[in-house]
Image (tube, rainbow, N blue to C red; front, side):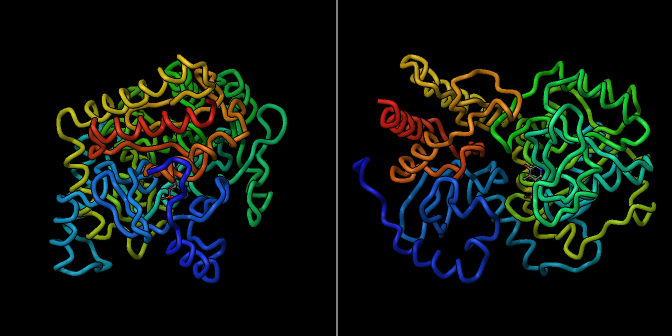
Length: 435
Ligand SMILES: *Cc1c(COP(=O)(O)O)cnc(C)c1O
């Protein structure tokens, strides 16, 4: 395809015109609307392995992978098979099923720092419930989050940092009362001194600290071991619960997520995305003494009509079984590393201010040219380069998430061959940007 030519979007445009009358912004989750990159969102018709096809029949190498859940790519035959087998017996019962035991045992046998789990239906729900549990367990109300970490659309976490150190948050969404936001303290990442000062000042009131141990929703703000370990030790010292939100990093950077990768264990963990094999599942877990506070054992109420849905459990188990095989994470990380290294070499040889930051099978286009970005304030807010690259790639058969703050995902179906093809196109796009 000629690189200056645009792909046909007739069907997507027509569908978008219709969907705008049906949904706010024409979508059921905001970033899908292509607002930051401009243009019409593509309506996707099908996926297979590393590829997706839109309604106009355009084919793409997919690095969005449904924002992370599809670590086995699209339409993995084992997941497909187990979904179909399970479906034959019905879709939902509102009563316990064997499948819930199967998936929970599989996870608990492999993740040493939790004794019990509770399944929910999304990452947001997992985080919301984990926060409630932390508050119920400690009897304290305030929580700490870090600027640049995303935890779903939980009221208490749609909060921005106020000005100055250790300030109470201000609401970042209409509809979140300031009174709720005030219960959340927002701190910068990678700042142990700030954290200690905050702990000293509000020790009596803080229920928990929540962090994405691999912050991957606002660029990829990789934290070092010193900070994460220091955070763990400070939480121990002040007896404040530590929540790792591993909705994106769990079963992604290692089977046991960032906790396993860094060897640092939280008190409560949240999962989502990969755990459901492409169907809606979330979970939170902790040691027995904490989980016994959850209803019906304890006073912290939390429930769900479709929680532990058997079809979703089956999809999740099929996926996690494959992920747990020897060498799975190593292989995918090696391929990702080669892919990013090639592009990074090209950029550094030409002095272009772009670097692909990566960990495991997650990568991010960092247009600062600065290595080691660890805080959201270090991200260049000018996304015009990213937006141009996004548009170029879309016209050349590579689909990445439509926002420069979002990361890309490599699946086990992205072979060396596919990644070589993608890196050639990305390099072509970079030449077009800076050349
Ligand atoms: C995706 C994500 C969430 C929210 O999960 P949903 O399933 O979209 O509600 C929460 N926390 C993190 C770290 C995430 O990446």
